[in-house]
Length: 97
Image (cartoon, rainbow, N blue to C red):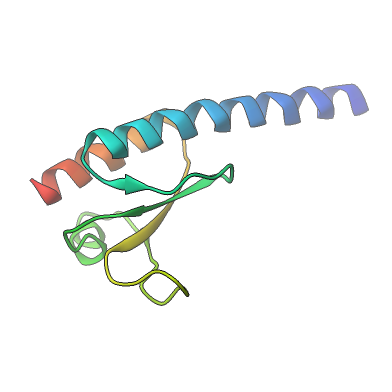
């Protein structure tokens, strides 16, 4: 049914927008610089090396050091469920201490 698909898409967008705001706010409260945007992922800068430390904890984030205009310390994370976003924020806080 086309109506159900439209409802599902709307609910999904709303959920992503809500979780995106939650994750963005959490990253900023941790002291990280987050780039503005509207995608279902966030790019941010951390002064501490995060990729390897989070990988050791079972969390994979994208190292953006090879992106044009970025460099060492830039990362990208997907907007996920509330619990997954909470876990990511908790682990980042522990890693950067």
